[in-house]
Length: 179
Image (spheres, rainbow, N blue to C red):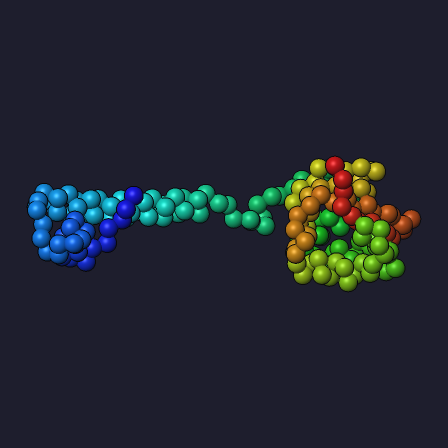
């Protein structure tokens, strides 16, 4: 489709008869060209309006990632200390989280030994938490679910808690869980 962009009547005449400037044999031809030009500009306006509306609708169709959207039922976690720790993690409560662990608790992430406090201080700063829990095993000490891990995104993880005889947690192993 040829899009005409004439700036005036003389341009239309030149398009009709390039070798004979300002001579037009049929005023009907000029009328046809003017009609085509008006139709093309109207269609372009309608096309851009349609695109604008289409993109506007897709914006309204998106949902916000609400951090309070998912309230999980943690009562299914049988182990009281683990349930308290997971509640603290979900609520971003450092003090309660660390109170669940012994002072010398060990920690591994995908098998690599790391410092529990520095790792979870960073996790609390980024408000990392479980988005859902889909499996609880080992008397409530092994937790599996989708975890929001800040800059790393969301993926399925395991948290395996080990409990000291005094009731506090003395070890935590976390890592990416495989389906």
